[in-house]
Image: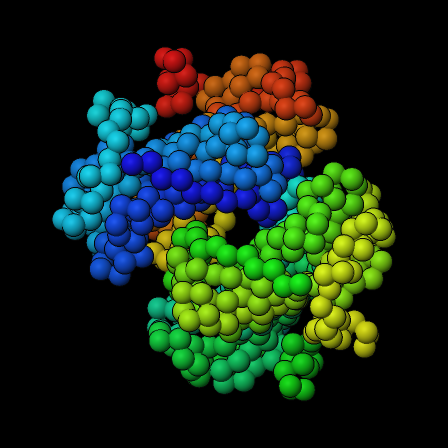
Length: 148
Length: 148
Length: 148
Length: 148
């Protein structure tokens, strides 16, 4: 499954170079994850209410071309690896306004933790839903993890 | 009491006009409040741990002159009104880099609430400490509240 | 004219109280303004490219009820006063997820400036378009300005 | 050279998990870079005024332990690789409040560009100053670049 999340670059997200500041890409990745979970059949807010939290353990991002104020942006989100407590999402940031030019790519490794912050297994129903939506892929973070 | 909080404008805080985006002033006011509380003898984090939260109910801000990246900024914070559950802070934002030019002024009205979000009286010791640090003043929010 | 801008509260916009941090309301107001201008027939980005910038001179915000992560939010935007160089927008922030409960209200006074930051008259075509979309109203900022 | 940049976690930087949101680490890295440049003998703002801009091309971040509101944080910044147009900085984020516990580590690859956004060689004096402050190291980004 690939989900699409569309939005416009906010003025407050631009910086003195008249481009979206690079620190907003992780925020957009997170919006992509939220939509991915929703389409996979659960919402992240509910997961937190049941006592499970997904925490970002690693982040990797490559910036390919600048985004300007008001550009229409699409984040494509894929789940590329999944284990009991870990999952890796990958993202493509596409500038719809500029002929769907690739603006960036990234990955995040997330850990499931309980209310005390200890690593915890994902609830089985959540795990199954995610499993059925996965697009297995090596990825940069995954590769370096298995190599490490 | 007047407290001073100094910092530099972050690159991420600038926008396409090469100025600090106006939405950061409320963030700086909050930093000013944190330092004010600390110098008044308690820290806000501890207050939250004891079950009391200060919530912003009103915000008023006037922008006087632009701030640029890396400008050294000083926020001066005063407590101008205080009741059992409400308090008003006022702020002056000063551009130290530009001859202490006034960059902005503002006020925030805060309400003390409990864990359920209901208005609650400030703990007596906190209230006393704040009382002794107050600089009574009419203020814009206060004036419009008493008139309303 | 009243425009509606819908979005969800981002996780990054929440704070330790599990609510949207108050500093994001001005950002949402700005998104509302952008949509208002678009529906009035011009886009703000184009205005900047022709050498005119709208700068926030005053901001007033009242917080009515908390917004949580993932809540669907609607910002209603109105233009309530307009002169050659100044305009006042008013905003209502509505929590669609919570039965359209009012989450906040606000106003911003904007000044049109040129590339050097000097107050400048709005381009006539922009001014006419805005004029035809105005909902004249006293407002809080307007009232205090005319009284001052 | 290793530079140290100290600050407190802002309330607005926390999220619903009562921790600093992961998207702020890149902002803190940038503050670390600014201080590094200043101590290397030039300021980044001046560099931009002379027509050179440093753009983040890659970002890598690992999150080790959570940071809470008001925690005193130190970012240690090193320059670990430098060529005519590229440089890699590495960062360690240390929680001073919690016994100097490591909160995170990261790297950013930056490209020097001119006003038109084209890759450009760093001005010689800037390049020399940076060269003399470098701590050569393999790094994660560097390694994967040379391998790619």
